Image 1 (cartoon, rainbow, N blue to C red):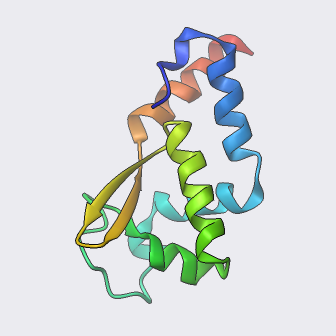
Image 2 (cartoon, rainbow, N blue to C red):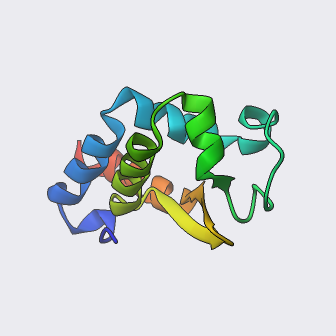
Length: 110
């Protein structure tokens, strides 16, 4: 898991790398309002508390399952999403506290 954003510029670099990919950035935008962006998919669990099933992210993005898994791992390593296992499926939701820390760090660092 990533360290607190205030701990240095290398932490921000990891966040920027994770968000520097257009598909990962799009996924983060979708996860901001999961009920709106994933309404065509029957939720397996509560989207607000647990997140969106990786299979729904894969279906919406049109990317290969392995690519989506890799992208979600990158976002997780940067601390931007939380994974939750529901049965055999992994669900992802944004870490809003972490995103707020990143925003503050950008404001004070740059």
